[in-house]
Image (tube, rainbow, N blue to C red; front, side):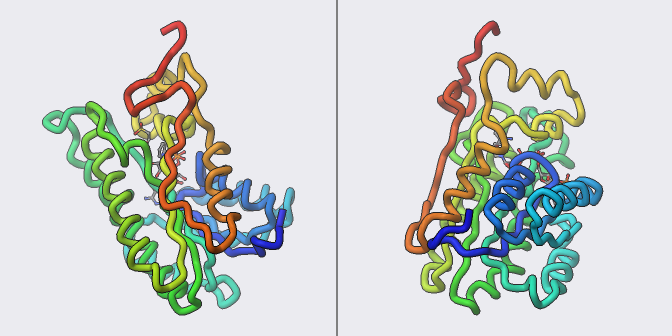
Length: 260
Ligand code: NDP
Ligand code: 8X3
């Protein structure tokens, strides 16, 4: 619902084809916002855009690109039509973990993809969008970190490092964008049942399902509520850093599981 404090905004969501990003798109559509939806899988974005238009009459712009592709990021964002150029909110959500292994046993290609997506991709998209926000003297950037941005866990090494980097970049943005009236938020989820583990375990559904067995994990919708909360707060209120955990999870590697 649009209230006095939150007018209709143009919100750019990376990684909108699944999980937290998809749930965020649906949540923000129910509130009447205009959405720019990005991911690599065109068919998922087409399906989501169709759903949002039909259910909520949402104005949607689809931007299919890989955030690792620097040229594509700048070309697509700079090439947005005039009426989509004024992005009010960027949700830097696209990201992934690949593998769960000690450093000496891990696949280097997994490290590269995580670093290129979670750190460099986030930086490219931000660099393409921030100048417009500075020019308009307003905006908001919501970076999706993780409990892995706050703690390390065994075999999480490079994924945790990428999310620690997101925490660090978030702090830098908060300081640098201070004079420009741009809000900057870090939203850090704990265990959230999305495609995350299926991707981490490269399609091994049993391994992925095991992660969420024996307790109630967060859902994409839970995190979408938090993102929406950051957006809807009055303009003078900024959540610097938010850590959201399932009640059954105290730390990254401390989950209270029943029958396990
Ligand atoms: P999902 O796998 O369900 O969603 C990840 C999204 O990122 C997909 O839409 C995927 O789309 C997109 N994506 C991945 N790589 C790229 C890329 N190179 N370019 C563009 N889009 C990309 O996982 P979640 O929803 O859980 O993950 C969302 C964010 O939340 C990630 O940053 C993750 O690290 C973080 N997170 C997740 C937690 C969890 O437990 N699930 C906990 C803490 C943080 P496509 O494949 O179509 O490109
Ligand atoms: C995703 C949650 O704990 O697998 O960031 O790193 S965790």
